[in-house]
Image (tube, rainbow, N blue to C red; front, side, top):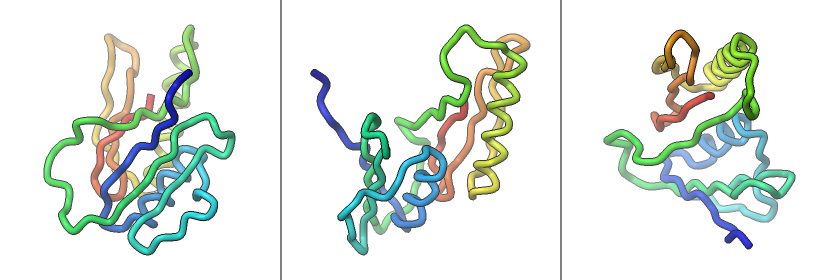
Length: 127
């Protein structure tokens, strides 16, 4: 049996960052969690891990050692042009929600993923 776990994240504004990631992942605020210096979001279907955000005084200073990949194209085999459209569409939605586009990574002539930053500068990918 798998262990239940939570991804813990540092943040300057935990509630704003939690709201961004809730929208990006289809998560919701964790019921009953009400802390001024922290926020937590959960998968409403109970399948994915919780993600907690804790206010810290220092800002981000280096590249993440670990990051989230948002997988919008499902599992292979893929229709590659359709997969590229799904990735670019989701990236555009996330830019509108406050993310920053960093760049696209390709494998040969096919889009592999798009690298982005969340509102506090944390890198993540859309694939």
